[in-house]
Length: 87
Image 1 (tube, one colour):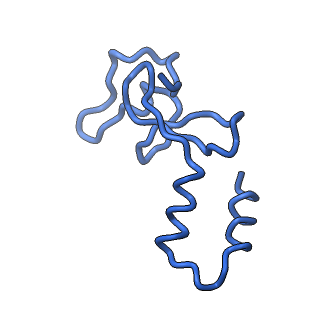
Image 2 (cartoon, rainbow, N blue to C red):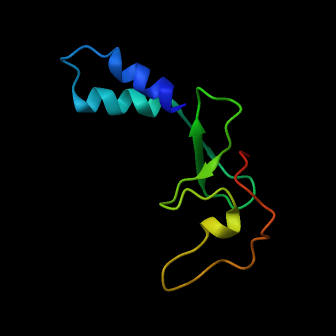
C-alpha cells in the first residue's frame, strides 16, 4: 500500500498543490461506521484485503483499545474481541 502511494506521488505533475494532493489521498481511503462501537473507521480503499482501523490517533483495530480517552481510561462495556468492522 505504501508503494502505491509513492508511485502516485512520483506521477504527479510538478504544479500539483498540497490541497490537490491531500484530496487525492482522501479518495484512496474508505470511510465507514463501526458496526459494534459506532465510531468512525477507515482503510485504504485501494486494498480490499486490508483491515479496518478506528479513526482515532492510536489507529487501533480493537473497539475496546480504541475507546481509550486520557483521564477517562477505556470503555469497559466494549468486549475486547470486537474489532473495527463496517456496519
